[in-house]
Image (cartoon, rainbow over the protein chains, first blue to last red):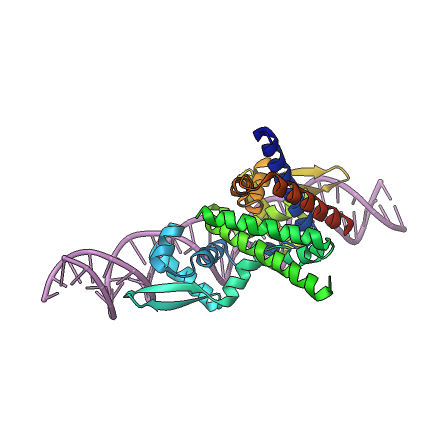
Length: 148
Length: 148
DNA sequence: GCAGACATTTAGCGTCAGGCGAAACATTAG
DNA sequence: CTAATGTTTCGCCTGACGCTAAATGTCTGC
């Protein structure tokens, strides 16, 4: 296939995917709308979800605020049982902050919107279609992993 | 295929997709992290993105706050040129609020995370894989549309 | 045409989260 | 041992949001 044609095919796949996401999103409530966190609290959770555990200093740098401010934000997240603090075994001055399972679950609901809905849609595909999809998603995963 | 086997296959597809999303998300910055809105402001934008235009009263109900509060939130979004107000032609008491193009673009960046990255991944698939993917995504779109 | 209802905004007040600098305290590094 | 470092506490300040009540313009039903 010519490069132009492949680009066109990729663009079509992305467009189709985008339209599907839009359609799925419009048929059920966006989890963001029922969220009761502030933006800074959510940012901390998103960072922790990705990094697993961070020192207060890491958060200070990531958010661009003072360590006193980070203490306040983490305190309020801890009060909601969304994060927990622990000591860094290598340096007892450092407080590592990590998401609780509830904190993780919360970020997950934001990132995998419509997953139950998607399950219902997938159930409407033929077995062959499902197998094809599995094969392709696994391929994409492989490729993404090679990219590091 | 037996129902149990199909459920298993669907679960595998969802798991593979989840793992792929996690991998993609971990390799580039989450646009949420550079957002400078408050949560209520973001919620209003998300609502408007979906509905296109809302009255203040619609927002009052959607957010569960007073109309005076909605006025403040919308004022501050308008000051950032993310929303615009206009009169409802059918009832001049009503103020319709709609996202500006900048407001739409902002919500879009949150919802299509990793789309450039995905493009690069797709480029690594074979032509047949891309065609299969397009076919399946279009099928899912069809099914989602039938569901209303 | 008019009174009552309705949609929105304004004004004033209060609370909360976040933001800071400085000090205190425990820990680490040289 | 001293100086530097990481975190928390304290005190102060600001901005956003949340509310009630009043004001103003518009609509509805009689």
